[in-house]
Image (tube, rainbow, N blue to C red; front, side, top):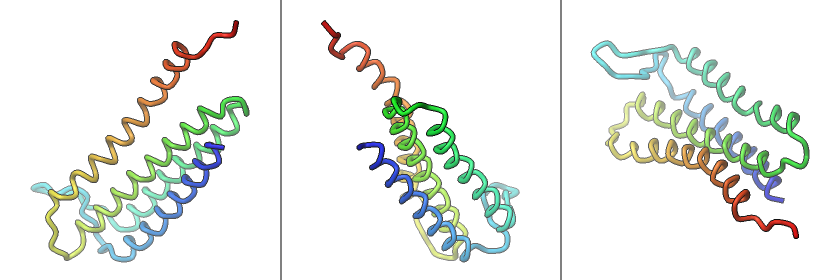
Length: 146
């Protein structure tokens, strides 16, 4: 049951990413600033679009690979992996929103968005650590058959 919920949330996170990405892509300038330094790191809007779409497509395609490689009995791992991809999609949403905001002409206090970016990374790290903890809890605290 939980696997079906995670599949739905994964699909929803992918659709939300695509909507936000296409919206932000339309508002980006021809040269997008990725990193502000003495010599700013800039890429063209098209390079950003195709590289980010490729990364997200490969990441989300892993869901299908994992669902084919692992048997039906490994529903716990599949659910965890769907959650992992969901957290990655959340991180991608936050990143593309920040890039779009940074390259806009709006005035914004960029220190306030740092907690959202780091929060999505912390969410990802917690999710990665949750699988080993889950397996240890099952190993040591599950009831042994009599």
